[in-house]
Each structure stands twice: as C-alpha cells, then as structure tokens.
Length: 226
Ligand code: ADP
Ligand code: ADP
Image (cartoon, rainbow, N blue to C red; front, top):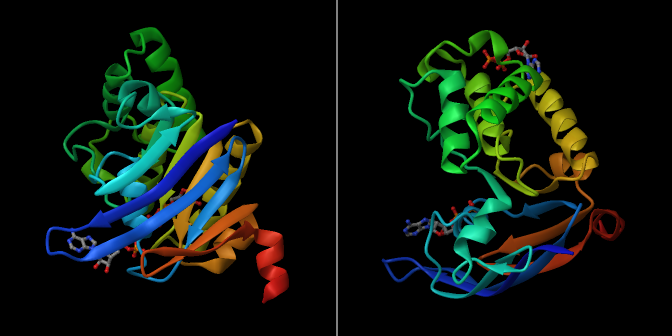
C-alpha cells in the first residue's frame, strides 16, 4: 500500500513567496523515508501541509488512500506528527498530555492509560509523569512530542527535524527507538539536514531544493552517486 502520496503540491505564502513548486512523491507502507534538503528548501512546508498545519495552494495529499481534503478524519487517524516546535501545554502534567491526546482520538480511558504508560516507559519519561511539561529538559520535551504522536498508534509517523539540537547520546537512542517502531510496522518519514541521519536510518529519500524535488531514489543509489 502507499502510505503517503503527494501530487503536484504547491504553496505560495501570503507574501507571494513560492515555497513549493509542484512537489510530487510517494512513500510506501513500511518505508523509513527522509525528505532531505538545505535550510529554506521547503521541507517543513511540505510536512506542514501533510500534517494539516499549513494550507496548500494547490495539489493533493493522500494518506493510505484517503484524500486529506475530502476524507480528512480518515486520513488523520493514520497519521502521527512530531513538529519541530514544542506545542503542548507546558502547565499540563506529562501523563495528562498523553491522555488528553488519546481523548482527541476517542480512545477509551483504560486503553489510553495503558498506552500512556507504555510509551512513557519506552521513552524514559515514566518518572516524570506527574511533572508539568515545563519541568522537562529539552531532550525530554522532544521525547514527549514523540510519545504524544504515538498514543493513537498511527500507521504513519512524520517527524520534522526530530534530532535538531539534540545531544549525540539522545540522538542515538532516538534512532534506535525509531528503528524499532519501523520494524514493528510503522511507516516513518522524517526531515533532516543531516545526511548522516538519513544514511543510518532511511531506505528511500527525496531531496528538495528551492521548492522542487531534485532527487527521489533509494539511499543506496544516492550514496553510489556521491
Ligand atoms: P525548510 O523546512 O526546508 O527549512 P521551509 O519549508 O521552512 O524550509 O521554508 C521554505 C521557504 O518558505 C523558505 O524560504 C522560508 O523562508 C519560506 N517560508 C516559510 N514559512 C513562511 C511563511 N509563513 N511566510 C513566508 N515565507 C515562509
Ligand atoms: P537533556 O535534555 O538534559 O540533555 P536528555 O533528555 O537528553 O536530557 O537525556 C536525559 C537522559 O535520558 C539521558 O541519560 C539519556 O540518555 C536518557 N534517555 C534518552 N532517551 C532515552 C530513551 N528513549 N529511553 C530511556 N532513556 C533515555
């Protein structure tokens, strides 16, 4: 199955700046995919549109065959998103943040509790469950973003620069965690400007530059070209 299909996506920001100029690519179910490119290339804009955080100007996005516009609820059920900016309520308790999120997806309280516990333990946050989010270190906040994106067990997880500004030790543990959930069946798409990150994790890539896809290939063949 195709997890994500983007067709001829364009985005003109309010100031008339054309950030995406007809971007198309597909990501297959089970893939670990990187959207690569220099700063300002259009990575966040692309993922922002897929995540419904940014409105597209034209083009289409399908998630597991559901059109993001026509079948929004179905499309969004399969999707978990980890944006770059921390956007949880800093005064809410860590455990409550996950249960609140589960509530948005209509997950029964008992299951929400179990899943929260599972992901908080998995991501080394269980001891912090009763602290407000603002008490967490930067690295912990980043892991909380990931835990929250997983609580409804999406088939597709999208992360925007997940390890930006993260120390090497945490970066490695995040990589291992993402590989584990990918092996368990979750399709993963991330943006990064670290080629090294894409190289160690990803099977397929698209490279975007000035709002256009300039390469869309396997990581292996990209490395052979270099
Ligand atoms: P990347 O994630 O690859 O660094 P972005 O998608 O954030 O790139 O940005 C692509 C281009 O769009 C950049 O030139 C950026 O300055 C511009 N841009 C991003 N957001 C806005 C906005 N809200 N208004 C105008 N221009 C924007
Ligand atoms: P800081 O932001 O203060 O650097 P971190 O959140 O980066 O703190 O890391 C705090 C501790 O938690 C580190 O010892 C790190 O190795 C550990 N840690 C990071 N990720 C995980 C994980 N997935 N599971 C368990 N422990 C982790």
